[in-house]
Image 1 (spheres, rainbow, N blue to C red):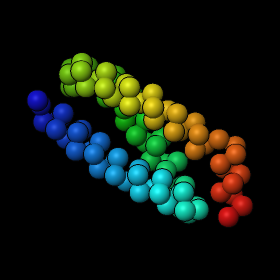
Image 2 (image 1 turned 45 degrees about the vertical axis):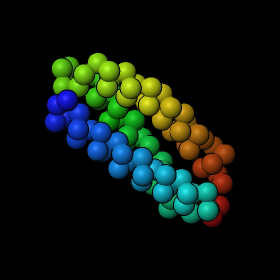
Image 3 (image 1 turned 30 degrees about the vertical axis):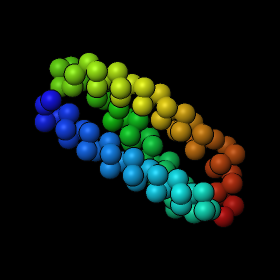
Length: 92
């Protein structure tokens, strides 16, 4: 595996931990946790699209794996940016 794969793998693990923390905060009613989740989920989605588009830096298996993760993350982005959740956290 290339250094880029190891670095990306480390970043994915760290961002998964942070995302979980933000979800827990949001579930407890934290507006800042909700905002952090909205921001981080979009940033991660952009990073995934970038990785998939970069030629040669990452192996095909990793691009496929990132594509699957990106589709799941797109669902998160849609839900946390929905009108219902925005209005729920706007009143807090």
